[in-house]
Image 1 (cartoon, rainbow, N blue to C red):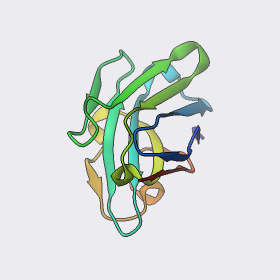
Image 2 (image 1 turned 90 degrees about the vertical axis):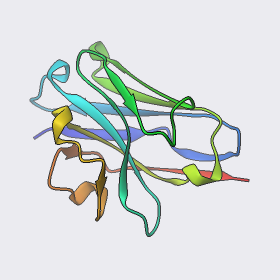
Image 3 (image 1 turned 90 degrees about the horizontal axis):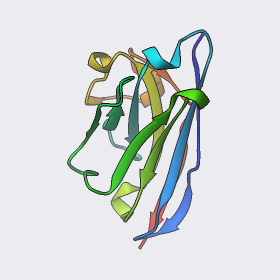
Length: 130
């Protein structure tokens, strides 16, 4: 079983920064996995905000483009999401997911970890106050 664990969430004021980490363990080869970062605010859909392929190709939702940066360290089997200039609208639980890039749906109408694709972490809370 592939296991993912997020860390790095917390509470910050608007304009602040956080860096989330996603460690991957289990039988998968990290270099073969694409990583997606999703978030879900209360009452909202599970939303794909960024992804990074095993060869380092990145993508971002318009809502975070220019403020968030995704990266990975294959030696550490860890992906990162650097979040700058945070806004109250960024408040959500953030999840990382591992699968092939084409499996990542842009939105899922349910709880992120219950989506019928990818392996999921447990999520980490990010709260941005104004």
